[in-house]
Length: 276
Ligand SMILES: Nc1ncnc2c1ncn2[C@@H]1O[C@H](COP(=O)(O)OP(=O)(O)OP(=O)(O)O)[C@@H](O)[C@H]1O
Ligand SMILES: [Mg+2]
Image (cartoon, rainbow, N blue to C red; front, side, top):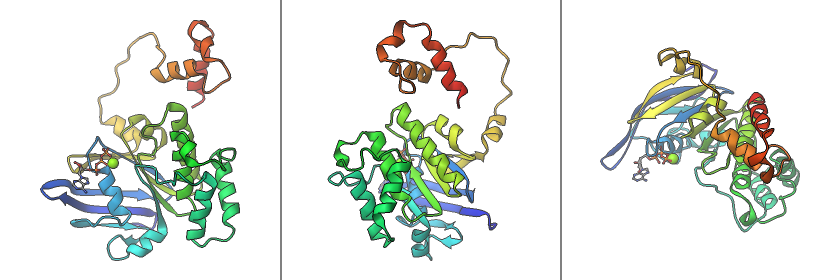
């Protein structure tokens, strides 16, 4: 393991009774990078994240976060990481701001109110800050959940399926938040079932399949595993995402009703693509 390694995983194994979920998982995550762990339902992604965040003990193998062993130095690991679980962990009865203040207080940070206000602003939740979380949309909850995990500036963060169940606009907001984290030097390990999410965000992508990492590399490296693309001439059709944005008008001011019959809307969809 080099000093630039934030997460080091070697030979990790885990079974639940006779179900041998992890059968020797190896990977490294460089400090300040975004690493995506891809896998289908039940592949063991959450199991890996739970082991790395000290919630679950591996049966074999080692894992270290910032050089701290997850078994022998669990407390040090907990001080280094934050975890946003697969299911939002916000308190419904409290407002968004109260949730953030509460966590800041639990972490004994000075001026919890100022920390809460800064995070609300960063995640575009200032207007909703005083409302109960029970009135929030799924995207707002997810953003609040990620904001909560940033309190105390942990150098390594785990995001378990951060955008599952979100609509495309909310997904883009979460992606922006994740990119911002990495730009600020935070190491991010995220799990996802969405290939596009890994493509958009990750510096490295690993695929967990049948208990092992079957590929691990940059997007360019992964693409080289397939034979070179054949050149074909096809008329470019808008993607489902283009159609969604054109019809909902989420990314501009057009009314939904304009979309169906106005030919000019096609332009809006392609503008969006170029913007990425
Ligand atoms: N506490 C547990 N007891 C028994 N089996 C479990 C337990 N937790 C997970 N499993 C099983 O282990 C396998 C891996 O589960 P895990 O939650 O790690 O998968 P995942 O890749 O996160 O899936 P998903 O994409 O659905 O979130 C699944 O078959 C699951 O049913
Ligand atoms: Mg999971």
